[in-house]
View 1 (cartoon, rainbow, N blue to C red):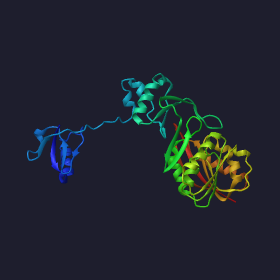
View 2: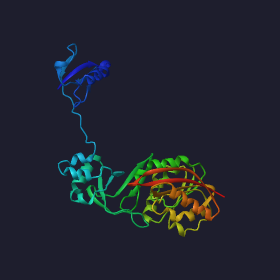
View 3: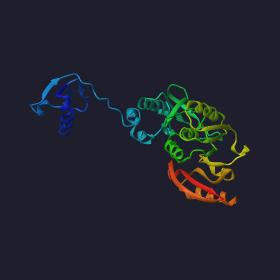
View 4: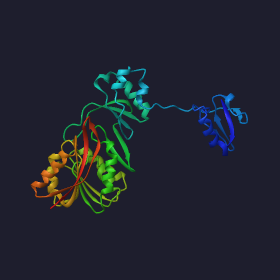
Length: 334
């Protein structure tokens, strides 16, 4: 391979000059030793004759596809490639895909391409929406290691889970950190639908708080207990495996988390009963706007002669065309 040999101190300036003149061969890596750098070139005839040109072995640059569909161009036609969703969830070492029904005949090829593209250990595809009170969806194994248990890393914390037995969304990472940063030390917090505990773990790793974490799914609570042991926490988390409506709470809370966007509104009356004066409810729902959720919170509060101050609203993520996973932070006062 032809390359320009230059002293190390001149390497970067010469590299920029050759790139600007489109003379550097970008398909090879620059090589360096103690004293010199070697810049791959396309055509030695156009190089400044005052520069030294040598023959040297250089390493080719590996070109990675921009998305996994590029690895399927010989398997799917153009229409099928257009139909295939390029977004997917990565949870630890596991990738979860959504494959349209008309492309399920190609699911093994799609799984293989995804595995090669992401460099993860396992690929699963969604077989159903989230179902039932335990919030679990059916998954089908496609490629890699058939092991649904993984450890997901988020904001310096570790979250262990079995993707076939519990629900977890990595797309709420920013929202979880935002809530954690808004929490004050010494708050008493209730997470009504905690799952494997991503909100409690992220909060308790940063703040000295007491969190009561409830979920009806026994597998979710099992992994929450493991996650408490996996992480260094400043706060205290008390997991409870039960239906939130069947627990007799003796004390009220400074903050209540209600991340069950499909049906959280059904539990607003209970949340209003359990929130302290000037306490915060972090409420989530699927909606096209904020008005519906705000009205629901105000209606529940008015039944108890409580006042509502909307602190903030935001769209957490897109759920479907025109529909959002929205967050509403509300202060409830007497």
